[in-house]
Length: 459
Image (cartoon, rainbow, N blue to C red; front, side, top):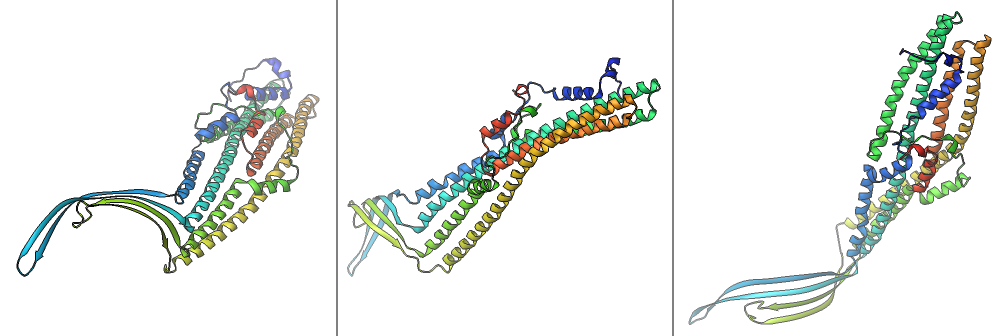
């Protein structure tokens, strides 16, 4: 055990004060460069690779509408041709044989406009494009909600690791003091070797726990760093006195479920997929329908053949072109069966996910209510544990308690503090997840949670 130097006056302080002082110093070590949740969220928006990939995919999928619209608009093309021609003309009659050679240039210029009048496939493709873009937008919203949840989870997991490490340091300091006090008591003939051994063993265990909690700090911060793409030096601490313990509003879980079924981004994406699959069926059905195009053409030709050398022709044409499918070997019918099966698939996926979302909303809604109650119970347990520690310390002087009782009381207080911190973080994350299920996570919600953190320790 490292050497411990303390004022003799410290022996007369209650160990509760020493434990509280050690914990306060451990938690007050946040430098001014600590990052808060709002800063983490803003960095994640621009730096998280998963979210950026979905954004790029959404940008690409948005092009489906102009691509489909182009199939409904006129197509204008120009054809230009100029060639050198050489013709040998041989004539044979009963009296003679003659050969004539012609060499001339011919040209042909044409401007053609083709306007689809009726193409069922193209109309269905245009409607499908809108459904696909709606699905892409919903998927982007889903990715944003997941980004907020991932960022908040990583942040508070890292903060919990920091809190656990601080508690472990405070516990180690308290046990170190107990070792010193036990040694002084033994020197005065008021203690036993067993008291020293008990305190020393707990101190040694806490040293091992300190290494574990220190490693956990590094691991959880690396998780957050992978999202924000920036080194994390420290985190803004949660201020318990600022934490708002309020039940979800509206207070009826069924209203939350109804809202989730309406605006949950994953459900919106699946509904759009059902509509897209329906339009895929219409595209397949188009194989049974004719296509009609309007064609307008203006052309000019010169010396088209050897009998019209140096002759020019200017031609204008307006007409309708119809194409009627007669037999495709069963291809169209097979496509329709495939499309109907895909519609059924997406409908079943939607129903399965709808039930899961309802269950998740119930779970998070209940977790918030239980979290509020648990925090209240843990706060009461903390007060009781503090009183128990003080009573055990007083009991030593009265001879009714042993130093082992004090060690146990200190351990109990640390455990209660750890459980209380965990309950607070779980309450916050349950609130975040519930908002994410109804697509309500935005910067304003992040600002609300960020106000619960220590703004003085964040940049």
